Structures are given as C-alpha cells and as structure tokens.
Image (cartoon, rainbow, N blue to C red; front, side, top):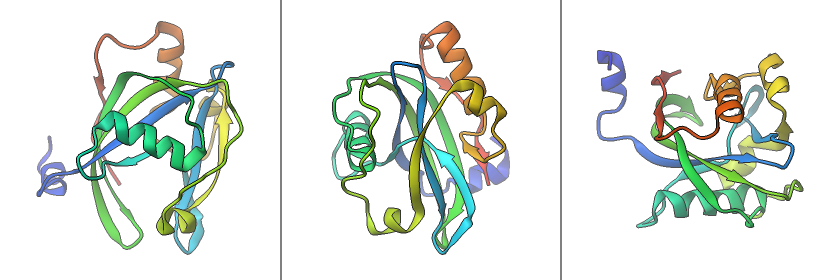
Length: 170
C-alpha cells in the first residue's frame, strides 16, 4: 500500500458490510447519494453500512439492507469483494474496510424504513441497474469498477474467495 494510503487508515478503518443485491433479471440495486447540502455532488453505491456494537458483518449487511431498502427476504451469499477506501463526506474523512456480499431477491419495490438523520439528508433514492446501463453510465458509481465486476459475476458466477479490490482514496 502506498504511504499516503497507509496514512489514510491510521487508527483502523470503519468495518462496513455492503450488499450486491440482484433481482431475477440480474439487475443490481444502487442507492443514489449526495453530499448533504449539495445534491449536485452525487454518486451511486450499493446498500450497506458500518457494523454496530458486536454484530457480525453478515448481521450488519442484512440490517442495513432492511433499513435502506425495506427488503428483508434475502439470504446472503458469499463475500464477493473486499475494498479499502477513504473519502470525504459530511465534513469528515471516512476510512473504511468494506466487504461486499451477494444476495438475490424477487422483491423490487424499495421503501427505506429506518434511515439515519445523515442518510435522510444524503440519500436521494434507489434504482435497479442492468449491467449494460452501468457500463454506459456517466454517473459516478462506487466501487469505481462496479460495471466490470458485475459483468464478471454474471458471466462466471461468484469467485472462489473474496477478490481484493484496489484501495480507493478520493
């Protein structure tokens, strides 16, 4: 890891669980976020968030998915990817160790049921994306290689073990 990346993670990164949620048509659900107070500074990302208390990453993934989408009828599959990232958001720097779990659902209606105050100010909605739509997208999407990663997942199935993605520092 480059020196600047190592410096970004001093004190240990926040443990995060994310969900790569696919519907029966192999569309992926992404949330539309923005900097609080600046809707023009926006991006798309997978549901998920930080671990609370003593919960496991799996428990955090399912809790966050339910809170952010209202979808609870899922069984988590394997961890697909792991990523370390560091980015500015809401006036501070967030250093995270993210694990991305595969899950499938037949339910496509979204209803955020328990957003935090910060999420209410920074999440503008959700959308199901096809892989082709992601490939052609001009919007910012995290992780930045998501279209390529999704294409590989759909073509080859889940990897034998988690793929470690490049560290992203924004």
